[in-house]
Length: 261
Ligand code: ATP
Ligand code: MG
Image 1 (cartoon, helix red, strand yellow):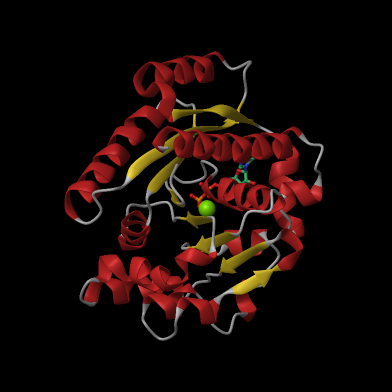
Image 2 (image 1 turned 180 degrees about the vertical axis):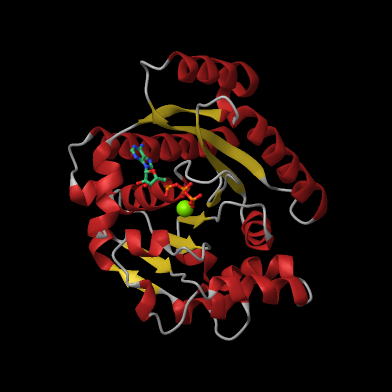
């Protein structure tokens, strides 16, 4: 199971940030060393773990533009047992800079390399586009975690994303794998959602996480308190789903270690 996971879907509002924040906090709670990287100028993951994006001295932008090392820009979020590379609107400038600079696709990978051994998991929350920032995430990652809502157009978007992953694999990152597709905001009473979910399993079988994240109002409320849902309401169905997802990831990792012995 990959260690550096890019949480990607070019479609907006599918649960990328919710997944990044809550999976990071769940892995942190399981005593894993976690780095959460916010690569989105919206800074939602930053705010989601209670860090004020308007009061940052350094951020991911400075790291990507080579103005500081990654370790210097990190914020310790002790309360949730994780570290954060925060982001704010400056990330838009980083994106422009990356397009102009040489080896712009590999900046995050290069910045991450010196600290990689300090973590068990690195989760990268990507913006809703297949932009230069997302390419940086895909170049730095060893796995792609794809949150998706089981809706009519979702499968179409998924094939575009799979093509991008294929291109990245053929060009800059041959070891990139699909860590898994995560069904989010799921409502089992919705027939279409069930149909799309069945189709996903038919096409991608074991690449679909067994864990399904239900639609849960506590998940939507938690960010306004700057808290992951396990801190805001640990007994909610949303919290339980992300704890289960963390368990599924850790289980896959153990299985992989045993198989390679
Ligand atoms: P963007 O593409 O803008 O970055 P995103 O893919 O990161 O969006 P989120 O911000 O995680 O998506 O979620 C979009 C909205 O849906 C947010 O308001 C979030 O609180 C809410 N949400 C996410 N997951 C759930 C869920 N399982 N149940 C209820 N609400 C959810
Ligand atoms: Mg987001």
